[in-house]
Amino acid sequence: MNEKTKKAFGEELKRLRCGSDRSIRYTQKQLADLAGVTDVYISLLETGKKNPTQSIIHKLSPHLAVNSNHLLKIIGMVEMDFAQTYLANHEKVKDQMPNLTTDQIEEMANYLTYLDFKEAVLK
Image (cartoon, rainbow, N blue to C red; front, side, top):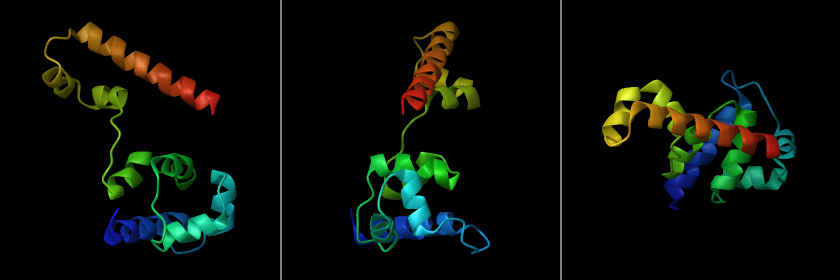
């Protein structure tokens, strides 16, 4: 990961942690405790001295009130949430998978939603 990307990630992490009005929403220590990491690690991420991983992004994003894709796209990654994509744009999904019936697409979306729920419960 290049320095520009790490810096952009760190700036966004700090902006989200501090809140939009610049009043501290979380200290680095508070956010670290919530995410199960150290405050030193949060500091290293914010200063662009450490590469964020997909795993840490998944740990941080719920506490920052953003979808993990918001942070993942900064580092050049995006996870597709098929169920959400289906719900937001049914026709686009049909265009991407023309051999599937509407019932099959709905069944897959329901199953993926179930898997997301199951994963959240097991964490």
